[in-house]
Image 1 (cartoon, rainbow, N blue to C red):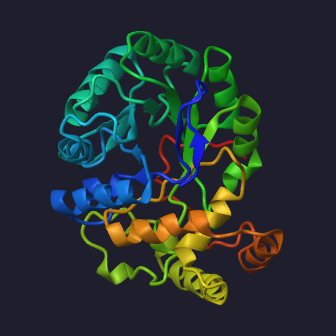
Image 2: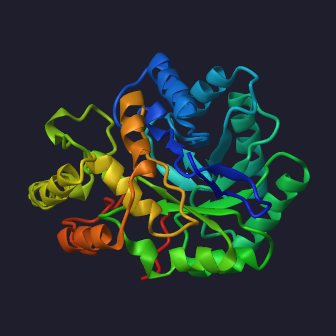
Length: 330
């Protein structure tokens, strides 16, 4: 597994990471044993970068990672997030980037993970009532105290990144980016490149769409994030399935899997991109990790673009509720 830089200080991680949202039940129930098998597979594959958050399963994802580590603090480079409040009873979200709340949540995350310092700490969503410059001062304080190693933001606009970077070093920005979600090409990938910031694409295989077997919305478990998602609702879903079949056929012709080809495409978009496919199953991670070994060419990139040109997807990437807190910039 090759490495890419995740922090401005030169910290390197595997070029493919593991998103751990599904450890918290985002796509249906899971078990600690299943998640631990996936973490073991990650180590075997050379995947040493994990991404989680305090609200993934209301702490469940962090707790599962912490129980796997059991004091073995150097197995992975770990990123977690704060800044979202979630009502346990209703699941409703609000956003809080104030210093006291971020400190309380960071301390709770460290306890669940069993760590004294987390390698990368993201603001999960921006609080519109707190200037990003003030948020940066809070995060720089945590860094000076040795509680976080690096600073990141999730789903922000390029203009916000530049404001934050004027205060201090921003190490990473995380946004959805894949063959059917390409908004970051309209400024964010370029801003990260210019500022020396790692860009971390989540959902690079389209929440299971760019795989050998398409997801079946009728089988989604209660609480599955995709149930209200416009791209998984009819008639959008059928249109999207039909378009992706051409991509699956290309992957077969190239002797690889759709997931591996989607990851290889993402890696080829720039040397500062570190995709984090999310899964709770070891076999799915192995499939995604195979993308690192695929030899991408300009001809294959052009063929993919011909099948799935920018803007081809039917339906918005988020429902109105899911979109809350995401900064728009185009």
